[in-house]
Image (tube, rainbow, N blue to C red; front, top):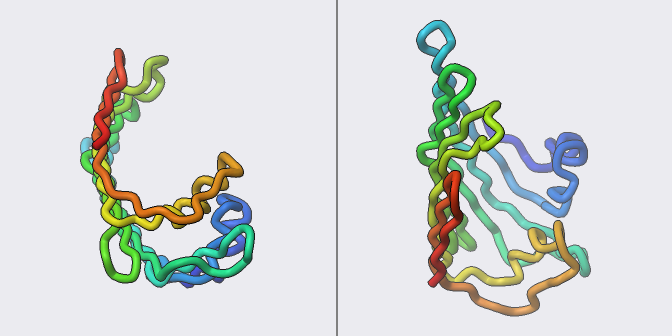
Length: 169
């Protein structure tokens, strides 16, 4: 089912107040939950798509570049209510119909274990991403803003119980 962003504003105000900068757009998606072995194994497959998204500038109040579109898909399995496996999760972001970012990730967590994280790995590709589109995200942690930039690159990351590795190009 599709929902217009304005219909979700009460939930956004409560759960994700930073999302209130979204001026317009539509969300749609769904989950398929399957249980096996009397509930000992739970599979979740999901997809969320956002279209026609325009984001207001925190400073000027005007909408920035757009429209943006994103698609997020994932598969996960919870075994014995203790082992969560994400394999894989993908997100693509498009600006004016052209893909500008893609993220792929997979991982495993042992819930209830102090170490928790078993392994996470993934990669991200940016192709002509206008830097000012990152300003709403940057505003969550900092007063830094990007005036003009085009970002191209590729990054890989891997995390396990012992170390974090990354490669950026």
